[in-house]
Image (cartoon, rainbow over all chains, first blue to last red; front, side, top):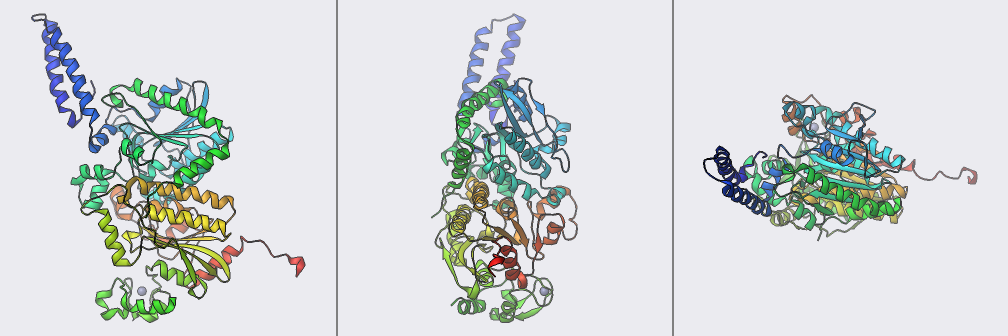
Length: 317
Length: 288
Ligand SMILES: [Zn+2]
């Protein structure tokens, strides 16, 4: 059973009871099999109820669950061992926080690109916590251009707490790198599907997020700033992250309602971390459903619709 | 009319040092402390005569610097950002908007106009830092988007003068998408082969840097402006030590290859005109 989040305490209590019941049952002194079954059912019901009514802040917590699958796990599962990672931006270095390469999904070549988080302390540092430097965005663009050259679609998997705000990042033009990607993605001649699989923070997320279709996993979040940073700036301290999460309307449901994304990909009850395989299957289903529709359009039409879609975003008086 | 208005406003509107300069008749440079009359300061294009410090000025001031005889036609003048999220932090965003509009007399953080620069058509979008830190919400994105349409329609070059703290948090996802929106629209300007000049002024940071401000056919900055993606405070926290001298200034950004040139405000109009001239059709020499 995965690590429980703070709001899943009620599940934790039941889980303890379940463990005890199982233990007694195994000892064979009393027949607890009915209790075990009941408790298992109750855990499922409790979880279903909890996850049906997650608050925005709870969603953010789920999106950061330590066992939530990261980009390369998705790619490996989707491409069934055919993925070959391609490295480097050809200018500065290979950014470990941004990965990409070709893989086959259901027989079709697809360029996969995404931010990569690390699975343990050492890897988290190696991956810079999924915060790319400019060379990460430039690697992403290089790979998109490669896909364009050979008329292969692009799928981006977005999961980042933001573009890295470091000294070298500024020297090497973090702003320009992201801006360039927005511009180039808007007119790229091949289909682009973007999926926010975890955290979609700000320009660091959008830097690989301009697509014909943009999806969010059910419990992912996507906004201009993280709730913590929003709290710091607008409330002037860290204590208002819960309110900030609500105010930002950063959940998949709200983002869809505001027409800032095109769809939501369902997660297993309890979140993607409770069932990786099922999550990957849903993502695969979505990609395979959307790709043929996008491939039918001409490159000109796709770009036109893509630009129109983003150009229509905004509410003015 | 513009000049009259300007002179009148020069007397009454605030500068940062309003309190130290009785009745706003004097301008005290925050860099070197030099004091001049506001008339003299304006005459010098709001550049300190002592040290060359370029004061932060308004969209209206830039219009007066760019357009011939300060004549221009402003468009989408009354457009302001909506509040689709009903955003509220310590204050309601709708109240913040109203307060800002009242305080500045502006509708939002950008103004767009067309007119002539040295006898040639030009479309100008200029940001106002005084309006919620020049932050980019739906109105900024939409007005830039329409300025692009306008430039395409009238076959006039586009000049965007950036001056912004970045995204407008109170518009959350909508604000973020203005980055994609403005950048996507710029591809249409490029398709139409219309020149786009981006002028970065103090300060240009965050989502504005990471979208239209860095996408000029020519990227130009005023001297000494703060230009960056992450704010200096955030970078300092990240690296855990003091920032090097001159970090994220125009000069630093030029040195690292992201600006074409830095231009003093006194030469701004001339140099922009000459730069744009290179993009236009060559004169038919045979007809001379
Ligand atoms: Zn001075």
